[in-house]
Length: 90
Picture 1 (cartoon, helix red, strand yellow):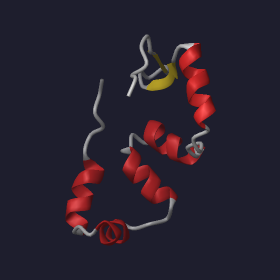
Picture 2: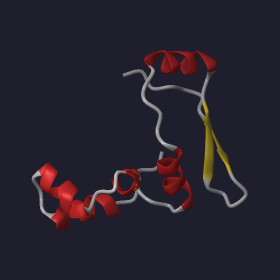
Picture 3: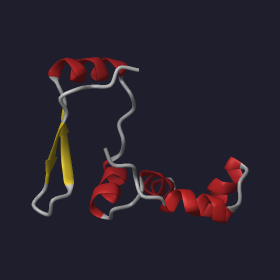
């Protein structure tokens, strides 16, 4: 996988990441992939409520931790630990 270079993170007034600026060529490559967009509600929960992405998606889909854990074949407590982990920072 080719990792993009020269990425700039723009922060809001509170110092939280708000935007990622990537090279235009990288943007064109990504836009051709036509990945489904991430719903604004999910992004908002991650940024504004400081949720992990996995929790934001679960809540957006209206699922309980128990439901997701059952689908993954793990315990609810094991899933809760994954959901509570801090996102990796780069």
